[in-house]
Length: 287
Image 1 (cartoon, helix red, strand yellow):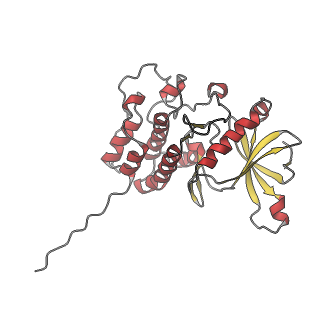
Image 2 (image 1 turned 60 degrees about the vertical axis):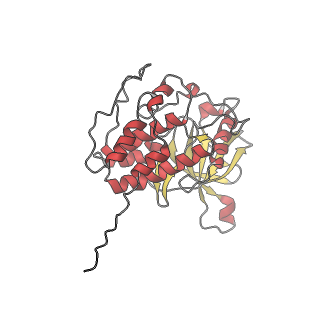
């Protein structure tokens, strides 16, 4: 990988890689020259295989445009989109964050999280997803590796497989999920694994599976078992942990129904069920 991008950004080290591209820690030489002590940024660059596709830069700009539509404190902040003229390859410049992703947290906490920690992670995540949906934006790949616990709090990132809902952001490059074998076993809704469209109900299923794993330490279903073309009644084989409110567990079971028509809870309702119970004040009558 070339060291200098856009005549301005010097790659320092690799932070992570996915199916579409890699993210690097980079130094903004212009900011550094101007005396900015915070000149470190993150650069997302398409991988070599995808970079040779005729619509590669348009697909990366699709991600930038989607994330730009969603302004939220729990979303990774974007700075700019550029195309390096020497290599004719696009890149996204965004804030550099430090902290573990949720897949690392799950490895370190195999029994799941206590309720207050689940709330600290789950409520911001549900909030940013609800906000994105209100703006007609679907993330497309909700999984532990795309949620970061930074020093500034929970951050959702990587809209590389995201889409806009019908009538939103028209004119952007069309993304074929089958082209990238994009779904992630264990978090992709059954209808997605059968080639169905990305919908809010599919996102609800994904975040429900993630919250279930955070709460219990285990995914609700075995990701190695192929999704059925028909959706028989199925519940998580795990019993409700004692520390979880019954209202939240019930809403969570509805969110991860195999049949999308049976996912009758909304992300907002799931969030309400996870919120801390309101304290009830009791006043004693004076004697």
